[in-house]
Length: 394
Image (cartoon, rainbow, N blue to C red; front, side, top):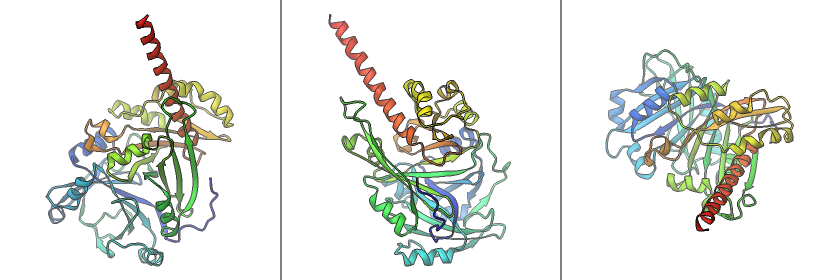
């Protein structure tokens, strides 16, 4: 992990502002966010603006985490064109900045491809909101830079009467955003040279030694960050052997190109959050029992002596644990949208929930331990099936 140089990107980024998610079924999204995640709708695109854009949009907010769900209402709209090329997914990642003009000047000097001029507006309460977009190497995903007054809404949005932005699961802020590529080098270089980000963390691993029958699978990941604001952008690529068997490759096939794989929400207490989400019908990735069998030994190896949770509780809820030197994190991954909604058009995007207890990394041990556990589980099942077949033939 790279230490904070204190330099920052030079873009005056304060943090993530929001992300824009294009969906084919906005009512399904409304139910997911409001009923399953307990994240309220706080604003919607006005009828006039929706008619002009040919799109409907809802703004969901939990603390500082903001998601705009956009759906087409007319043929030929930008949202409809997106859905012709991709399943449901993120098309815009927005960063909040201190001085929009200074940000634009810096990006122009570094060769950024501007997609829009600066858009200036005030919301229904007269609060200023300014932004512009740039193109990225992340397929059709754009980066947006926003300078706005506190609480200001994007142009065309009308506030709705809600009970505030609190939610029972404690979702607070975007911890990080992760994207998948066939090769990460162009995007990592662009993040460094154009965005001014620095390398924060990297990992390379493969499970070929765990499952020699199938050859295993693996990935390479590089996390880039802005030391000034602390925002982090993770980037994954598949690796050989079995490049096309990697989960990363599968995402890119399902997404029809590179894209945002998941958004991670930080919570103060993960166990009650996961408990509540499971009760509401959210499904999470299964974790093999072997993962928890090996967990105590792994924590000793990683010198985590202050682990205060019960392993049995972690196993019951499916929560993953990782750390080192008495700093650790707890994390869990939801199933992808296509599985959750039983509709492949809902896409391969998913959410992560994470609680940090001093650890600043990304669960390197979890990447490796979970992949290895899955591979071991596959080996055990294959051996059991061979034994059954042998018994049946005797």
